[in-house]
Length: 431
Image 1 (cartoon, rainbow, N blue to C red):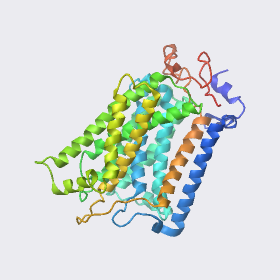
Image 2: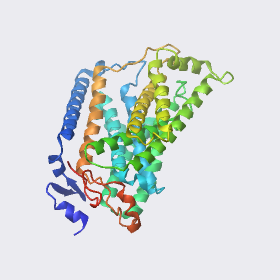
Image 3: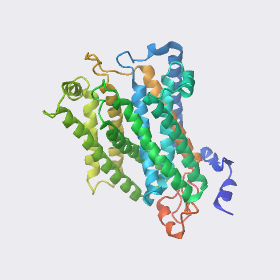
Image 4: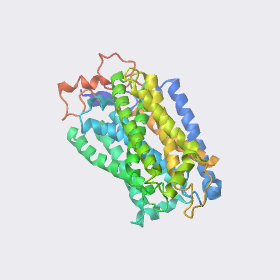
């Protein structure tokens, strides 16, 4: 009897689309797990109530205005799309570059990427006063609008992520198909993040947006924050008994994270120096940037620098980089830093109007905050339940066509929680 047959005979396991869904794991989940689920359900419900208020009362309940036509919804779209990059990078590093130390994390990484793009798209839909008008966006696209390209790319990328996850779980096509899927997903992810950055960069009337360096800055910050979030998610899943990872995997992840962070900070400092360099400075650029360094917008931008430098400083020490508290602190700091960075990027285009008039900082309304928290909770709920019922632990021999006995020891990087390491890692602990 093979692993799949043994798994499906377990109580509570149902096979659907070639995957064994372990619903029995929910019945045996511990009180910590269900307390977390309850909190997420409450915030999801609050988000639904906020959306109902928006649908019934219109845009008057939002803090967006003529001068700030994009608000929290768009900064969240940039943020969630960017965060999805981390999962794809980790997944691609396994199948394209042979980074076997990340293989135990690959399925969780792809699940996280798909969920993040899903809530990014849901944020776009909830911002519409009449969401059913999305039909016309699909059937009558405007080819000169960059939103057509980034929106369609996000939808296709979400489908790709979930298709990749299905291939990884079912093993259909073996390593050859997984490798080909990665070859499709990786350039598609770059295309998605590039077109999202171009939403800002192609606005020539907004000085701080209209820069070619916006694309690489977006890519590096997306990768860094996505890897940081994946590290946090891995620790959370391990805390709830879904996985148990070896410390060596977290060390590799933190080393990679520190490398991307320093590149991201370098690009940001290069842009700031270019704006203020005496022989290169332009009046419109320097005046607008000053709002974010010393003016009324500094509260949202200076923490980006402080948290970014601080997170790199924590990970720079080779003797302390392996400590879980250091890894989690640095990852959490950078996830918050990039959220503020996305919020700042959105504000940079609106801090001064197209006619040069100053605009007071935008702060979201209560309804907008509820929508944001509701979507975030829904995404976490989707991922938390998915990680519990789906076979997220990589079997010892992985895909049939790619692994032999030589890889068995490499796949021992992960074992089910609360199970002795001598037991084959076929099914995650459901406690």
